[in-house]
Image 1 (tube, one colour):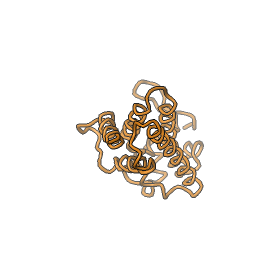
Image 2 (cartoon, rainbow, N blue to C red; image 1 turned 30 degrees about the vertical axis):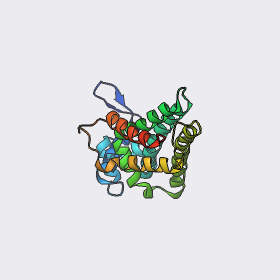
Image 3 (cartoon, rainbow, N blue to C red; image 1 turned 90 degrees about the vertical axis):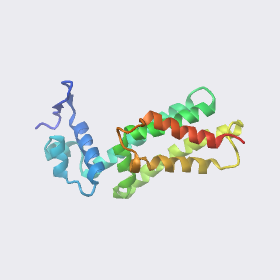
Length: 203
C-alpha cells in the first residue's frame, strides 16, 4: 500500500492513513492499554502496513503523544475562546466549565489514555504535556480570579483550590462515565458546571 493511500469511509471519501492510525491507536490504547498494544495490532486495526505507519509515525510512542496533543490543543483552544469572549465572567466560567466536561466525554478514549498512560511518555514529552496542562489550569484560574475581583465569586477559597478540585472531578470521568447512559456529555457538563457555580456563589 502506498503510504499516502487511505481507505474509503462510509461516505465514500478516503480516510488518510495518519487518521486511520490515530483512530486505531486511540481505540486500542483505551481498551487494552498502551503497553499491551503491539505495532502489529495497530497496523492490522488501521488496515495499513508497518511501512505506511513508519512513514508518518516513527514509533508507537509518537502515536501516544499525538493523542495527548489532540485533546490538549482542542480544550486549550476552546478555553482561550471563552476567556476572550465578551459578556459577564460568571457566564463565561460556567460555559468553559461545562465545555471541559462535554469535550472530555466526547473524547472519552483520549481522556482515559491521558491519565492512564502519562508515565509511558518520554521525559521531555511528559514535561511538554505538563506545561500545556499548567497553561490551561492558569487560564481557568485567571477567569475565576477575575470573578473574585468583580465580586461575583466568593473570595474565601483560593482560586487554585477551586480549579484543582474541579479538574480532579473531570479527570475521573473516564473511570465511571459510560456512553449511551442517561446523561449526554452536554447534560453532564451542565450539571458539573452548576455545582461549580453554586460553590463559587458569594454567601
